[in-house]
Image (cartoon, rainbow, N blue to C red; front, side, top):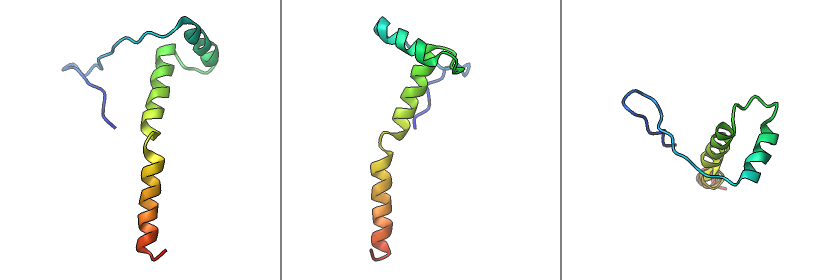
Length: 73
């Protein structure tokens, strides 16, 4: 996965994303008591998880399929 862009002082650069207020309120309710520090940190966590695992099942399936084929199955 591509690493976040960093400035020379090793701080990650951030941008701004607009979300509908009702969605923000739902997220606030969802993260209450979880230890998640903010709506922004929750959104970043969820998006990272989606991006990390988005292509994996198909790639893993093809990898296993090739291994089985090489074993004669």
